[in-house]
Figure (spheres, rainbow, N blue to C red):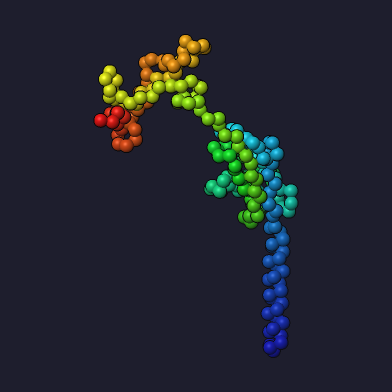
Length: 196
């Protein structure tokens, strides 16, 4: 076989390989997904609430799954038997959130990402000295003092209407430091004591 024939054969093989790659590429092309959610996907959503986000493919290809990541965290894969998938996301405690989703084709090809930035409404600040979230100040004190056993004692504020309950607490107090303060293992109430 002459040099010209060998060159032609090599070019034919390369052209065929390129054509096959192009065909495979076209067959597995998949567009980034569309993300939809209540409130236009923007929110704001209450922190701790569960919001349904739906991934659909409106471009090229039909995905068999989607991958998504919330706030740059671990990628989670969800099946999409009919090309669509919905996920429940519990809104974390931060004001600005970002959800990124990718479509996955049957052969494993992953699309580019679609980013949905949304907002969360933060929980209102607790009332001053309110440790139980009922809007009434509570009393918290360390034990191992005169008349009080070791521990960390919580007496909740009274919630009766009017001035009669103002500044008063319910008794008996509860030892919320019965397992210590986390500085020793195993913990004990004596971990919580007033400075000597």
